[in-house]
Length: 254
Ligand SMILES: [Zn+2]
Ligand SMILES: [Zn+2]
View 1: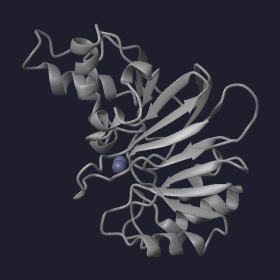
View 2: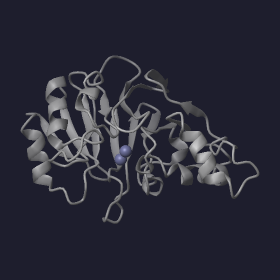
View 3: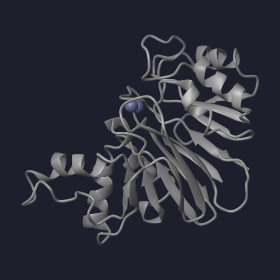
View 4: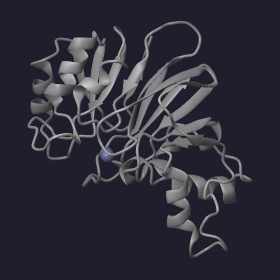
């Protein structure tokens, strides 16, 4: 299984070509995307064609995790004969996009904006997409926010756990199995300045240590966060390998 970081910026970035949350995961013949934040649809073409992506799985309703579903849908409808990845996300995702996009361009504001595309609402539990198994669990952030564990559908090898946006480290403990890679947000940098909402690098390190994760990749941190401070914060809690997500970074798992 292979992870490619398409975009890892938080709500905005000051760096050109630094798009928001989107992670490509490949196993055998199956490719999926976890999240599709702003700018990531265009960045995706560096690594694959959306025609090869079986599904986009959205962690939560904040725009930095899903707003490039708009260009994805336009590409599918107008550039790919209505064929595109299945779209899975929180229950509100499809009606929210219907209201957002359809009122001025279609006869009914209640038309499903993603009508061409398969998919549906996420619930806690496991489901399969091709060669991949996905386990979804709710996490503390905004209502109906998810973290995911993705693993090969065949066998019981290590997986990758993506925190989504998560404000309570304990929420991730049931998802991470020993030997997994943990792709974990550190939106608060090194100092927690509010309850809930996000994690610090130290809290991400704590999750990696308590679960026996094989490695930790910090993501969703601000441009202003210092690399050495982030890695140092995680390393105080976790003795394994700690990396900072960067666009184009790849990781082989298993
Ligand atoms: Zn976010
Ligand atoms: Zn969020």
